[in-house]
Image (tube, rainbow, N blue to C red; front, side, top):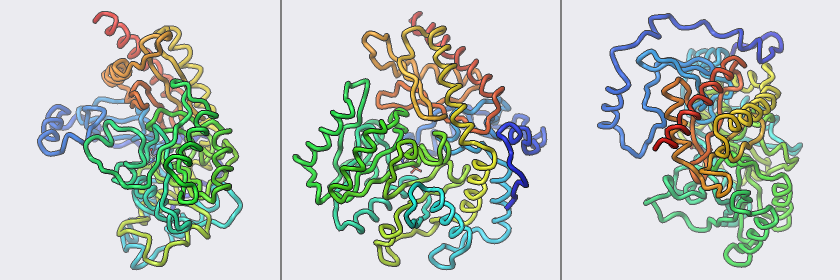
Length: 462
Ligand code: PMP
């Protein structure tokens, strides 16, 4: 694995970009975006929606080129996977070096060191001084499913409590836990039993932390016998639900409630982890130590890898053979993850995330006031996990999903990839690589403002 000899600042890392591909690779190919859209429509089910009707040809750090040779600034980062950017040179080198040795043996048949090394690293990074163990799997949903299995086996209890607006995956168990109907849960129930829902605090809906905790306690009285609940699971910052941080006092209260009833606390860090919020794990901001943590996305810099990190005694609850999967902890992905984690550390990306978040907040406030008065209702998040929410007007604060969608379309036309989020689909989230240069971010923000003005003007004219 390639190792940088000395600590790099984010700035120097950006300068030390990998050698760009041959110009011929960036020239338009015979394929067009439109022809690929047509082929895709005929060959791929419509349920797999794509936010942008463009087809990728090449990507580097925070930029992407499509098959027609158009360049885009990538503020979506493959849905929060690319905190270290597209094709970070050390991540790619580590994966290639691993490919020269072996690409798959199945850890359950012939194990390998990269899995063990990554587990050791994750145990070291995760909050809490207790002994920890890590299971590696392939997707975020699989990590969540396994966290539930482990919690049930460790406690001997079936119940799981999740929150309104949460997102935990698209498999049937995780869909049962996900707290949003359309488009995820629509038409595919019934969902597994013993999954209960508690209210998430919401400024929009006037639900305070106190209200949310009353809701949870009422759930214990009405549906979920606390001594039959294995775990409470939540995202320290709601991801798909709109980049809303869990208030720290809520997280601390949940820890106390869990301890009182022998319930395990699971932090789903699939989207919020690996530096996005300025710390390795978003829950660290609250000072709360969870029993289990699910991880994926930016952990492996673009390779499919996920995991469950947890207290060693809990993680050992299942008998040998009770955990695993053919591809879980793929060695190429493990090598990539070690390099991505090292890049976050050596390039000072945690610090950079905090600064980047402050910058986005300040610029969004300016842009909102200038180009969309009374429409940008909220700017929120933690570190560089930032979202802006749009409404029809400040007085009614009615969610304006159409405006958010239109901003994305105008931005794409101007060369900026943006992605929405939120219970009402009226928020836009920032997942730009933490390695992006200040100049590139500014270029993206200028496009954002332009797209916002165009979308607002179009709406007024309609
Ligand atoms: N949990 C959270 C918090 C997520 O954001 C996601 C994906 N957006 C998942 C779980 C599911 O991950 P995957 O798509 O890799 O299954």
